[in-house]
Image (cartoon, rainbow, N blue to C red; front, side):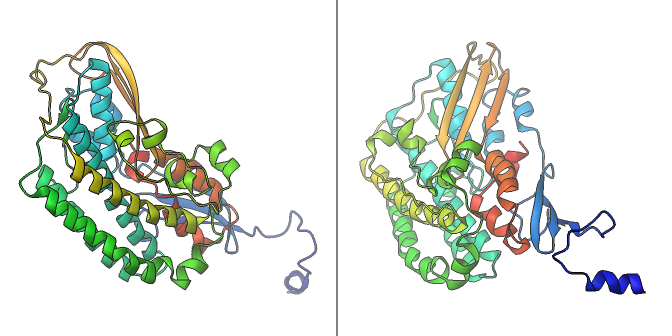
Length: 386
């Protein structure tokens, strides 16, 4: 008993020796924890409430998309790639179609290029609305997901009308898009954009200007500009440290060079600024969508390709990039002249943000901030498990 009392009374300023009890413990969060962004888990080593080491744990939904694509015809893979990132599926369709087009030398009709931009920006808005809801849920502001995810459904209604699918669209095809706008679609797009824009002040009052969010997210998970570049941050996470990098302008594709839009940036680099950059991006995406609907040219939307059962893409390779809601999304495709891709490699933003950067930023934060940092980086676990 005297030894126990001696240890209790020992000054905390005295250095620990090898006989002291270990003060570090391990805690698992996920994959079914509401504070985890999808089928994913964290293994945290803590001292008290402070995270001293973090290890991500994926593999809960691995489906081997890259290898599956090597076993299927070029056209069949269009139904696979959209599943690599469920909240923002269309950049995968965009990259896959453009990679095939680059290898095969396929021309895309001008109208199809405008439609692709429309689809990409609608997908960006829907993804950000989904992220806002998840982020708010981690701090108990459950009205926000009820609002933002319900409002997201209005965009999914547009996707269903245009493509026949609400989440997986299977719409971008090598050579263009699968079908043109239905009657009255432009008007309904304007109506939804007007509605989403009208909701932004409500989001500000409820969430973005909420004292709870400000206290919980400001100064949390700070990423410096040097770290962002060294660790490979892209998209909103890079723009939140003041670097205005955006592939839509820096390595433009489709018709983005014909559209006017700004690239929102902030300089704090913390969880709050990463969230606010996405809030500002919704305004710019609405601006882009309206320009597309008002200026889209007439014409056909698809250059017909050979019978998929007999189609052989010439030998060659291509590397294409798209600015997704998560950041830079890239595909490297190799064809050996056969009916199937020889190799397809997906370089998504989520492996960088949701594994490497997350593991580094969590060190030194408190346990209650783990979900704040994770949701602010906006990773997509299916893409990590591709």
